[in-house]
Length: 206
Image 1 (cartoon, rainbow, N blue to C red):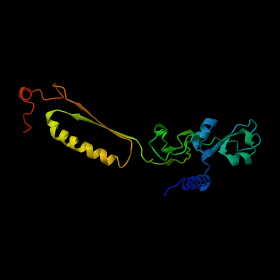
Image 2: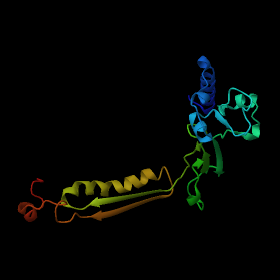
Image 3: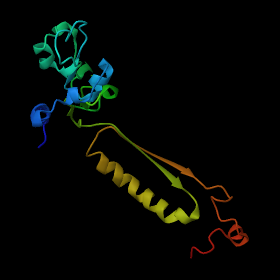
Image 4: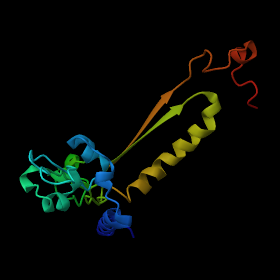
């Protein structure tokens, strides 16, 4: 099973590979000339904003891995290295029952509100918990076409209504069943408008 911990480990291994494969430095290979360009190269890249950085060195690229910049004399307070974050803003506990006075405040997923700050090309992780509460309210509404072509279906629904209510009662004590009806307009494209169908709407159904 794929877990956040395993994914994070794979990400660390990928970063290590990018840093060491064939001596390649992905941050310096991009030839970034600004902080924005540097941070867009890869999530592991950092930018040194120190004015005198590299003044007495032949290697003056300000875009590099964070630890490399520090080794080359860039003070930590001048290093731009934003990281992706996830903050939980609303985290009410999961409900255990769906009916009762608090049925409109049922919580089936936590946390309910999260704020994400993502660096371009980066990723972050957060966990979700889901619980299907017992006795959750259910509303079921049937809208039936009362034209003659639907007569068989109407008879089925009339016979099924009581049985359906009984079966749903096994799942929840808060079940409401409603029925509605409509008839198509006597005009195209809702109905056949040929004269023979207007004289006898049941033409062709027997």
